[in-house]
Image (cartoon, rainbow over the protein chains, first blue to last red):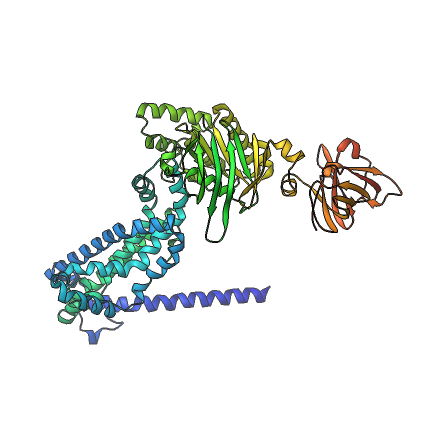
Length: 276
Length: 342
């Protein structure tokens, strides 16, 4: 018995040790970033002794009023919004159709929706650029040309979230019930599918939002100034402002995801039920 | 008036034939169960009537008119599913109302009809609850009300009771039968549970491998099955090793009989109902009792006959003296018995 207790408490020690290490790994860089951005002390003299000295939100204010930051945030938000919109318009009917009428194509669809993460952004961008630059040059010069890339890139998450929602609501039986009652496909889609997929759509939207707000590779390769690419630029010219901005973005993304998890928990949905 | 008729309906999937020139007529106002083991085609037949699957050959007629090419939404049949199928975003009341709304019933008339239906299924006090707040039995009652809302000519029930607890199942089964009789609605009821089928139906259609084996009222199905499969599938039946003497002449447990079907084999199994075996105490008897189970009106005795477990059902009053280990004599009533391959 005693021995058993020892093993258990030993296990607890390891558990907490692991958690502490993990927390340190996660938070130390953040603290370092915060000190760098918000303490008016030269980096070389930052130490434990002056941990509480010279804090100021000046960098944050500078970041919030920086015209470049405002413009790129607006662009990134627009991109996130359009990405979510296009994803729903295209993916929702396809996922619903496959769930109800073409179950046998589901493995294929699952595999295809994973492809965007198997093809590196460089390959995708180079391929698309080679096709579009000579044929429709205006397409890639517009910053919104990132939307199709982002729709593809968020597909692994958005499809899985929607698919899990469709399975959970028993879309197929619901379709047959609605049809036997005389509902058209459109009626069924608007009155049954959409209301019952709200949670899944929210999950898909928040994940897509978080991904787009942090996406760097596509924007950089296509020479677009979005929030993440601007962060890199500003970190070169005004490091403090850059780091303040990066922290802010991180905080907002974490807040969104936290709210989502909390919302799902209150609705009794476990996050792994979204298929992620 | 609503008569459903299957005329030589064949439905093939890639490699299997789910329905094989299936013929069946369901009379107006009749409740017919489609009964059979899984994969016999009963669900396929129902879904073909509903219009969810097309057929390769043959036709399905409603009052003599083909409905084969009418899409499910236009057939106007009521349907209740095995899986709970209420729309999760709507309350009990809204689910029923939605059915009426789809049929473009006017708002006033809708309200009245919803009230009526909530009374029929006795769920007035649960009307504002969402499906996840209702029990399985309550959900299926709402589903029934929703299916009946628009007074469809035909009601299709796809194992509506099989996901429910035993006691709820019996109660809902009776309710379905009551409502069906009251409305006189032509009903097809798919089930794999023979007791359920026997209990609820006007006639039971036994299916196997996509074709109809026999359709009859429950008593005839039990007492006079037309083939060994039906005899075995409907009710309990003993399979007792038997030897062939000549052509159709067989011998089982020391008794000779003429088998009802042809079987070319030296040995077979005679199909004998438990109540067709008379058991009498006899100290010199060939068999001994291995188990005695009191089941209320009947008492079930178990013996070994020619190496097979055999049960005999006796009226309990006449079975009070039997104990495990007693020697007994058996008298098998073998009239019209089937034999099957051993």
